[in-house]
Length: 172
Image 1 (cartoon, rainbow, N blue to C red):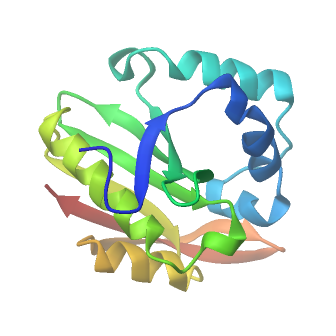
Image 2 (spheres, helix red, strand yellow):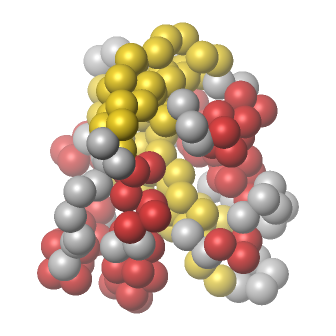
């Protein structure tokens, strides 16, 4: 269920810290994750440690996206704002290895996550927020069955300019 033809979604391990540190501190990814300051290795190490806890406790879960051939880590996919009462969670994804982008691995990862959310967590829906200028993510989530359900006007300020954020939803 947490694997497809090309990828495996697995739990974070302490060995993932160097890549997590590199990708989380890459300023070109900050707008995507609404980050405004660098993460320390200590903070990310604590995150990895906490991520071993139950999603019912932390309300979030990060999975490492790992290729089978060649065997390597290429990104992360997250469930966040997990709500077991209303049976929903947010989705965030980053293919941090830029050489592995646009190869379909993000779509495979989302499909694996959708199956996990439906079959294991008994979720009813997934949602995501996407910057209006992030055409690649909009295309990815639309092709993965997500529907645009709203716009948050001028939600983010980037380079002193306001930007809309799109709200997407998928009923499982």
